[in-house]
Image 1: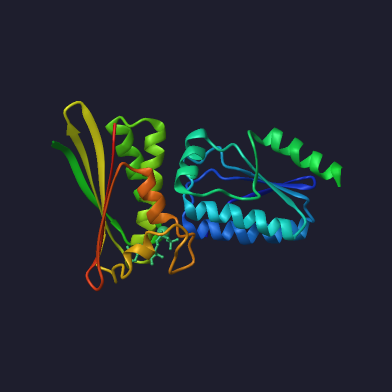
Image 2: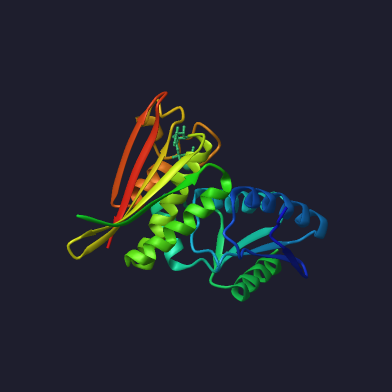
Length: 120
Length: 134
Ligand SMILES: Nc1ncnc2c1ncn2[C@@H]1O[C@H](COP(=O)(O)OP(=O)(O)O)[C@@H](O)[C@H]1O
Ligand SMILES: [Mg+2]
């Protein structure tokens, strides 16, 4: 079965979503991530969706779930690289992604995560 | 109004939802829809295709590229012969789901496209037509 790779970058995890995910793949990613957060004692997760040309309510729910899960496990989630057309469409769809932090790109997301760590 | 091109593809399994998204993107580009409008109809199609698979027990997507004077449009029909929608008012309520979704598929799809028409009969099936114009 195919999987979305999770990269470890020091105390953070980076997930770059490069394929148009079918639903099972999204669910597998959710499970894999919670395992890795725990195994690596990660303090933050970066989800790069710059390659995604659409986010529907299923993928949106997965992003929300990952953010909620990581919070319980004491890690922050930052969603990076959302294309403007995707952002506008999400709002109209009615998906608000409460509590999900966003950043323009991976670099800024990383800076954001570091700053949050330093604050603790 | 002229139908310039049309076709049908199956929406039976989860992977078909991904294929439907790809087809709709390609057709939306072909129609000359702007990027934002492409994204809106692709997202709406993804929601409706998933419903066809999950709730409708599988069905088909018909597509048509339309021309009306200077305007071009993409029309999609998602149809299944599943259980149908018993309470339409409830189904068309933001946040309501009979399964474990977010309950934003139908209402969200309606907001994302210009034309939205739903015809569902319990025991007969569901047919949802959407269109987006340039
Ligand atoms: N093709 C269909 N056949 C039967 N019921 C449907 C169909 N599409 C939608 N529904 C019903 O409408 C409800 C709302 O759908 P939707 O807004 O997409 O939310 P969700 O998919 O999150 O449940 C579904 O939970 C289901 O009960
Ligand atoms: Mg749905």
